[in-house]
Image (cartoon, rainbow, N blue to C red; front, side, top):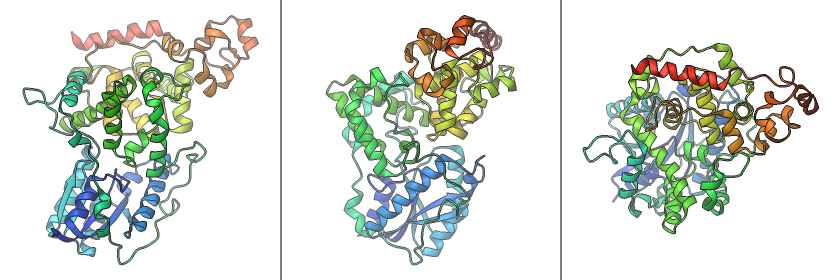
Length: 478
């Protein structure tokens, strides 16, 4: 027997029907389940551009979700406004007894959910949430002393020790799909223009929102998973899964991905084990954000908040615009600016360069990535930047500083990636493409890459910048 006569499913970072924890719970508990998504103006109005690839990706995903729900006999209402008021108001209008949603761990989202829960409670409506974004959350993985982990490797060991098939089992939403309901005022989903946004180059980049696109990418990646350990660090190779944006918006289930990786790991696959580690890193950073929400604006290691970063605006602009004079850095920044994506190895190199070569506060770079990455996720972005800046959850000491030239030589040895995004260096030969300022004047002219005219000179000397960075860190450790 159903617990409720009717309920509302509130989709957020879970834009799919299959293996959706909250949708399953709603359908199992209520005789009729309505579905809604909110284009939250508190989020949309704060975006710096009306041409945002993420908004277009969400819009595509919501449209596909609506079609899938309709095919199953239900429907999707897309609301446009503040979720804090839109969800309680819509739930009250429908006369439902409960609202279901999946957990969101970001501080602002938690505050939003608390406000929604209070408004619903005043109306006599329950607010029920489920775990869906991660395999293990909050306090599920703790040290033997009952405290949160602060270093990844012991967390990973505990995570793997606890893992069992139960935690990877899919929620059989289809078993209760008959309980999906259409709202009395079913309407067309809004267009991008209705939302105040315009189309981007997403289609030209070959990026598509929705669960079908996510499954297509995953099928493409599965045969490559075995080689992931060797190929993942080379930006010119097809090494990653390219699923990060789909994980970000929940168009694919993390349980499906972790289950496939775990099974392949059990069969002795090093590539699968490495990819599973990346999914565990994701859980780790969600856990850190939950237990230490201060990391949104402060260093995980508080002592490093005392660092006096020079924060030269001209150097920051050169980094943003891909004109630092270091080809691997500039290619990485041009990639994010043109596509909204940056290869994971390049994220580490670019972040390290901004902080430890240009001596710019990691928060500046984190904010830039947050505004431009298609797959921006607060927990992972913050964790990655603090890792690169040595202010976060990292067992390595602060004096780990990436050399951009040696990183370029190692991970883009033939300069294929560099040439893709810096065509002015296309005619450089051999290792000169990694450090074009080392070419003689004649070599520069022959390559059509005269330093200072066709391509900028390095904005800093790496060796000298490294010493200055070490002094900054030492100053707050004494």
